[in-house]
Length: 184
Image 1 (cartoon, rainbow, N blue to C red):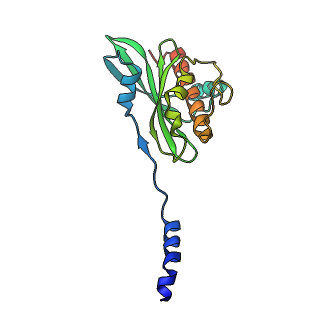
Image 2 (cartoon, helix red, strand yellow):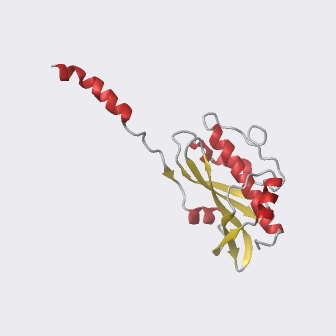
């Protein structure tokens, strides 16, 4: 009888000790995102880039924290002409990584951003087209600040902030590489 009375207590202890459920969702592959951003492209060329110390300083001078010196950029092309660039990146949401891509046209403006994978339990509203559309047309030097230029989503503040910072980083990265001749 004692065991039966303690059974509910033991079940609660076991439930509390169980690992949290995973909420990871993959929405798009890198290739799908590239085709979505540049549907007219007939090919995508992957370019691996290594930033030097001076380039890293230039990014910091532009107001962005350079998270890595190594970047892979996909160049969207049509009949040999460059249409733009797709850069994949990851940022921390609240606790987990958010994988995303930004498409930048040859004019240096954001064409589109796409969330590839979202791993948080809350805040997936950053995938909504209306929220992502706020970045379209943003260029190097434009203010991209949560609560000022970019609307926040209640319950997803950190995801919104970190994605905004990440998109700004990609815009400045592409601008730097274009001006240094690293992207054509």
